[in-house]
Length: 42
Image (cartoon, rainbow, N blue to C red):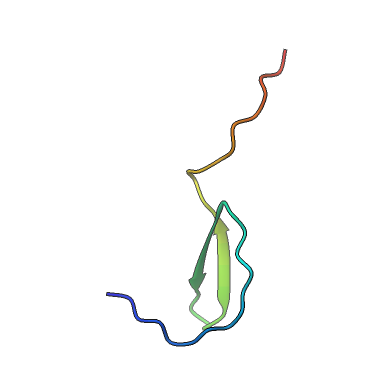
């Protein structure tokens, strides 16, 4: 189970997953799902 430790004021962008890395810093990674649909190229 997760526990909130602190509010740090990070502005989150859609399409990214935010996590705490091994050094204790906040990192983000592009999510594999949840992409916006794009127009088909002809």
